[in-house]
Amino acid sequence: MRRKYIRKPGTSDVNMTPMLDIVFIMLIFFIVTASFVVEKGLPINHSHPIGPPPAEASDNISFLIDSNDRVYHEGRYIDIWSAEAVIKQKITANPKAPVVLSVFTGSKLKTLIRLYDLALSVGVPKHQIGIVTPEH
Image (cartoon, rainbow, N blue to C red):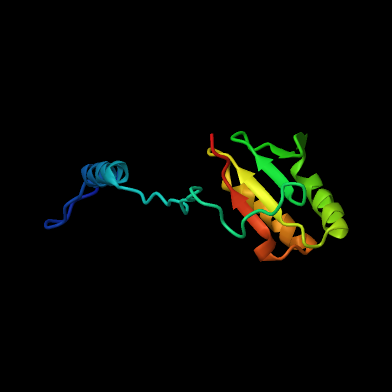
């Protein structure tokens, strides 16, 4: 014999599906309409040289960073990690030689910072490192 379930008076069954639908629709709405904070980096103003004015061109240890982040030394393309050896060689020959980093507009800041940090790690003082923008 089957048992019959008898509902007690006063109890009701609550259907949660419509409430969950509304909650998910609201969640999607708030995710889509939320404004996210876009962090901006520091702007670099290349309008004037930073650091000491470059000495005579023959004494400088100059590097050029083009808009494609390629590094050049004395007109030749070099790897960024070989720049450390170049700086060491030139600084041992002339300890007072300034390091001049010429940066074209459109180059990435990380390439400039790598070269700057390489010069500092070799032992070049901060006041001997100059950053300039070539004028075209």
